[in-house]
Length: 145
Length: 125
Image (cartoon, rainbow over all chains, first blue to last red; front, side, top):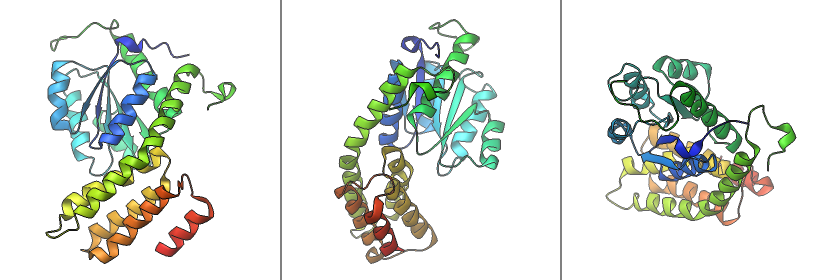
């Protein structure tokens, strides 16, 4: 069993579709996560990342994924937020070329659409667990950390 | 519901059960949301047509319908996106595809839609 203390985990969902955001937030709630913020775009997401560093970012890579990939790349470079924040990508394709580009940009793991409950619970849970191993649960990290 | 004996190592069976129940609840709401999206798409065809907004709506439908149990709607959305990308189709070519999406939700054609779903796709092809 994954040992995720979801009540203290923070998740940020970045997806242009309100229905998909609702779906992902609902699935995160099933994982016990009580703090889940939403952004329609990476532009909306950056201030949220700065304000409250999330333990996990779930980001859409459908359509033109350039902005999402650039967001991950900039986060990893330390241009904003915490460089080690876990990122879970959502993509209609898990073709190896897309996976390679995503990993190179700094995305930790990918789930494909249509989203399955088992897949997102497993991968999001594992990434949150990993994030909690890196830092004490529920302790906010300062930008300087 | 997932069979707990077949769960991958480390997966919380209770969390999965909650997630599947939540997904099921949202899937029951989805036809209502989709109808609203289709109405918004139709509104984009009213002169002056808003092709960019139409593409965004259809692209979102394509990306999400499968997750809510309606892969046929996603498939039609994919055809519509391709159509909108490749040329500037008149409303007469777009409307039948929007109507097909409505038929799918009217008849609750989830998953592959069975025989009715196959016939519908064959007619559109």
